[in-house]
Image (cartoon, rainbow, N blue to C red; front, side, top):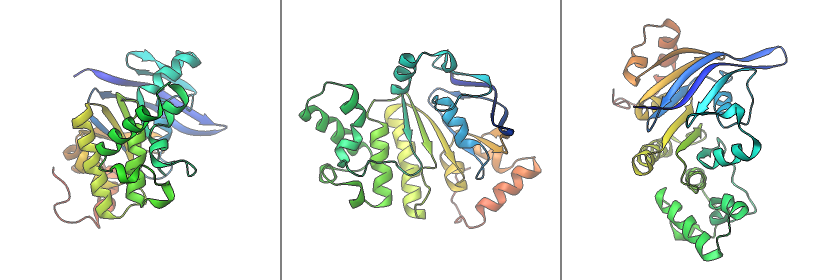
Length: 255
């Protein structure tokens, strides 16, 4: 299977503080690749570099066969259209209705008429388990789980080839967290998009991933399948996994 993403020897510093320290990995086309780590480990910073929101101090990032660090501003905009991003806090616009949030990119960058825009919004909302009755609601009228779904519908609005999920289960109860896990898996099956999931949710990481990369203090500790990570020979990784699964229900992982 070909690589969709290649990250090569990535470093990033803010002043004297090193955030990323020689990070190198690849993501295969069509896989669910999870970046697992604690708060401040650098996992979200990696994805911000991948979408061009942060520029590394050195290293390179190849996506779709091109270095994104060499893209012009116009090329970068075109590249980002191929990438869907689900933000940790959903980042829905409170003043816009759900359907307007979903097609926000098209409102700004396309000539679709109102009927076409609403049709796109409804299609994407149905993909994530929402319906026409949610179209005219404002984000404040949605539950936490529904906000995540609406935000995912927005991420899907441009039919992206790569979807990045930043802490998708953060702030959700266990039931809604597992529903989001199922949604990530079904979205991959339906769209064939490549997925990068950033999380510290051990149940999610071990349940939905094809491969997991464990990071600590801006460095990669291990990359492997869920089973390889669960049975890691690395002492720190074993302890990290053990701490994360203490309160997980029996049978939570399909390893």
